[in-house]
Image (cartoon, rainbow, N blue to C red):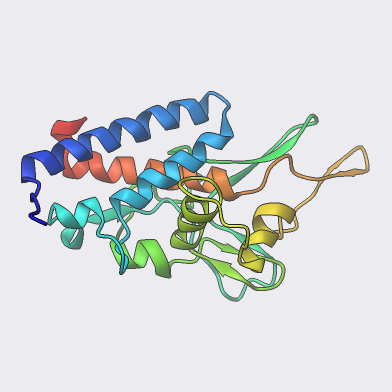
Length: 212
């Protein structure tokens, strides 16, 4: 069958559309619909990772290899015996405890202007270590949410370590209010996707300012 090859202008139009999707989903997420993180994961999957079955939009545009991606995570310390949360922050009040995406509201120890090459940012930098010493990268979380958790597909089987993090908060943090132990109201998965989307949007704004 004869195939039509999309032009560079058409690919840029797709990119502009995906950026709009991401912006709108980010607004929805920030207005309180945490489930919108699943759609953010799908857009991130379209934009950045290459697999044996698919080529990312940024690769199709010939831009990904030279791009540097914003890295808002704190530095992972492998010597830390406790669990590690390098990407989200914990918001505590007398009413609830929850994981949130800090966006650019970072502690002094976290550099909001730091950038990394894609492979390092995507699948080498550890952003979580749980209570069984399982570690997770951005790739682990985004692809699980997009491919298995309802972003674009639902898989009845999940990796056990991911299931422990996403269902049972295997980071193990608790809040104590007046001596009473309380669980967190959410897990770090979707807040992490929101933070990764924030990094991607900032990166794309640097690379394609005319689309913003």
